[in-house]
Structures are given as C-alpha cells and as structure tokens.
Length: 96
Image 1: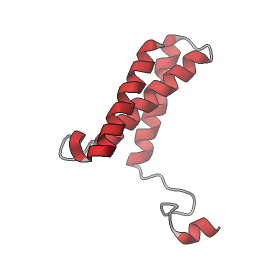
Image 2: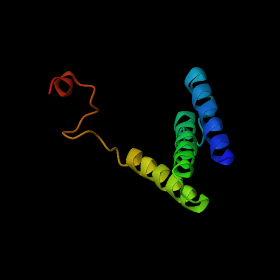
Image 3: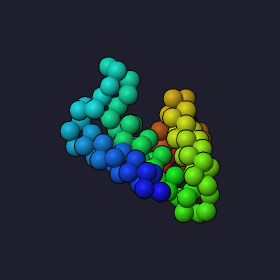
Image 4: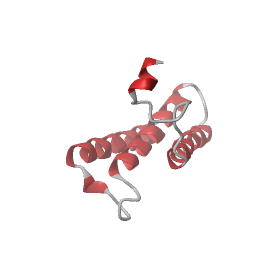
C-alpha cells in the first residue's frame, strides 16, 4: 500500500506545483501537461490504495489502478463530454 500512497502523493505534489506555476512540467511541446501527469499519478495511487483497502490482492490493485487511469486517459483523448454535448459550463446546460 505504501507504493500507491507514494505514487499518489508524488502526483499530488506535481499537480499542485503545476497549478501554481503553470507550464513548469509541460513535456513534449505541450503534449503532456504537468496537470495531466499529476492528476494521472494521483488517480493511479488513490485507486490502488482503495483496491487494497477493500481486500483485493496487490496484482489486482495494479490492474484496477492501471485500468482506471487508462480509462481516464482515453476519455480525455476522445473528448468525452456530458450528454447533449458542450462542456457543461454553458448557462443552457446548467438550467436544464
């Protein structure tokens, strides 16, 4: 469990630093942002800790964490949006 906690904590630090200092961790000409990297690491660590806390084996925890992280990456690449399209920030979608 300590490995997942360390990964999640490192991701949280990267996430907070990138949110405070902007493009400090942008890699590959902006293809990978520090915010995305930090969020991914935090998600991986948190889902691994939750899987272990619920009695799953270590191997299952790694698979669950990787699957959830992969799903988040694929969702962000495909531009998954709320039902009805848009970002969900438009006044029309808030009033529904």
